[in-house]
Image 1 (cartoon, helix red, strand yellow):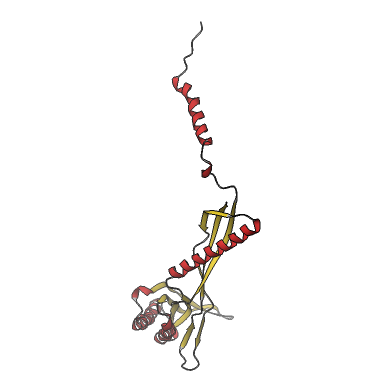
Image 2 (tube, one colour):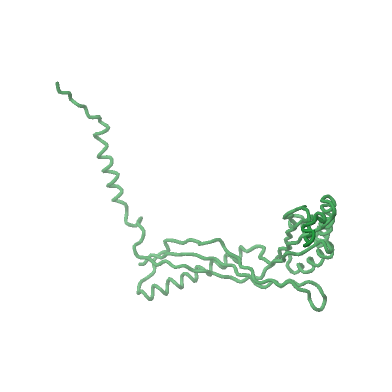
Length: 242
């Protein structure tokens, strides 16, 4: 006996649907495709700015017979440093504790080896000085307040708000890219069309200059040389060719 196989209606319409979708894909307008003729260039914009703030890193360190005594003395020295900063109108939000530590301190000799001589306690600060012209005087006040317990790890000038400089660097980068693309177009005897692609290759970068911290010969006050810093923006732009 022969059995008549029934074909599902869904199977009958599956092929036409696929064909229609495929046909629609081939019917995309030519304008949606990536231009086949283009020029792509990389360019940088650099702006020099004078820093308006200073980041100060300082640490108080004390050695005492016990860990409790070392921590207590370090805390007292740190309190004097905070008071000196407050007297210079440094806001509380601009003073940040970076680390606090207490650990055994050893002295090494050839005959006895390592011998514990007490405990070392330290507290490190990062201070934002928003008026760079006051930075040298603040360093002197911090050292005077903390005495021999305080050490300065660095005083680094930086640009507090680089938004304006970054905007100028972006404008310079675009101008440089346009000039480079125009030069290539002239060499190749072609005309630039519209911009079809632009990407900022990295976040704006600020390159610090060398910083000097020294005593002025006339007044013996600490001076911090601000120098200049480069704000750099790197971009890639693509032009279609007309």
